Length: 475
Image (cartoon, rainbow, N blue to C red; front, side):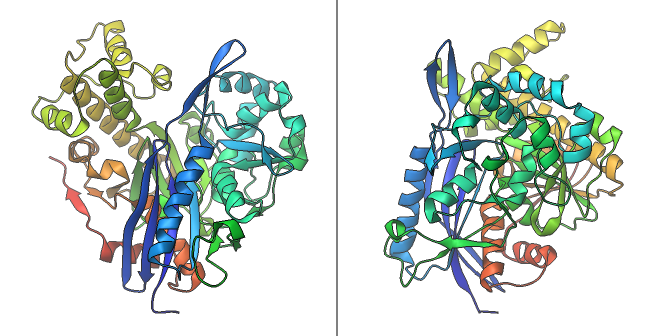
């Protein structure tokens, strides 16, 4: 095992992206931000409706700028890994992207649900794919593409991180942790050919599958950026950002739960094998692939999106507000008597989140918060209540004796949310690292490159030794 080396993580979140430059070794884990950029969806008119797309070309330009910065500082870089949000994808023909990928919040996904469920019972989908029901899961989006004829023009389907990897190397693969979020992957890590046929999806569009740690290829000549020799290898990581984040949770998985808290709050436990039960399906828990064949048994809870979209709405109205100030004001307010359902479907689409929250309270004859700080406080408490309930349900469904809750990602720096989660769960909350996704990404690369060795527990021990973790005890 080499003393230490350097790798770069391309980490694309649903609201922002970053390129991180990392130095890693048996006693070293140092990350430097090479680039950070917004991820802003684009609205375009399509026939009779307004559609929501990702600006993948713009994101890729930011990625290349970030890698160029890394090359100037570290021409000997050994590896690059890419992770992103789940479910969304691009369609290609002859290697050319057929339009910008749809955003999972685009309303077209509703049609896909009826198309799929008319062909296959939801219970069968759960037995075979182990996936919680979300109306934007890839199989529902693909069903819409098939019905609209888009798939007939395509010869490849690539999830977002696989698409970025293709543009970097020319190699077309699908990494298993993210492929598990499509609803089309079997427990053995292979595409579900029978289900693909039942849904009338063309088999030709599905790429070969690879696991985290697989070396995908070298950078294309146009992307050398001054890297020395033949340039760094692009390595498959846990390309679903939550899969990478869970790698970096410094936990004892046999007795802890995690919350990867960013745009979404992914709340669950790590298992050795799937749990497929009627109770799990009723609670809408998912079995998603993790690094080293682990299972991320979790439930998607609405996350910091509620705060960020509320801030955007107030700013659109001309209010001069920012999150840090509102959180400080909210912390001085009394805990609200009532919380709202953060999983109410009306909160999924962009727009007036504060107005929809007030509407939720008024429909039930409850007193709604009247100020931005009051809205922020009730959002935080409602998220904490949902997180606490979901942790308890995960423990009940799996038998994992949860003794602590780890919060990683952007939510780890929200002290009000961390304390509220501890208070409502009755469990200590251990917050950090904030950049868990990028850390998990670089750890898998470093192990593949020989800078590290060992299992996930060994990698997590390194995170615990080198990262500040803040403890919040229930009050």
